[in-house]
Length: 175
Image (cartoon, rainbow, N blue to C red; front, side, top):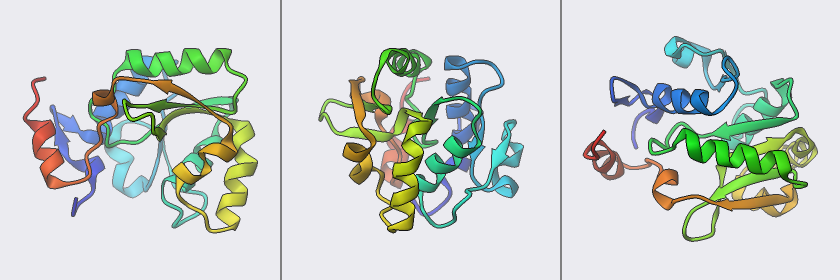
């Protein structure tokens, strides 16, 4: 993208704030927290926690979220999915409440898991800890070890923004 996606202006807020508001609609009020640089994201209106282990990418964020949370199940969402909906996130949370799996991850039409849109149980921590120690940072590679249950969501809900062209396309969508 060439710049911090979280801080891109979107619908009168930043992309980070937009996604955080959607998450807030799906969960218990006051339960939203951001994992990232407090100096960079501290103005978003939510608690911000730095990664407990630096330079691990999204894996470090999931690991930090599960370590800091007081609850067993935790919804984890990347900030670059502007089409998320509270209804889709609630569907993941509801499935997690019934699941015997360690995590419930969204999939799109391709059937590929989206590890940055899922509900993780704290039982995932040993797998994440081992992956960090072994320098295996790609979340998709850890899905089998995590014992994930997959839930299909509409593909457009999971569309993320990684390039200026994708960003332009998202901005052109009706509100």
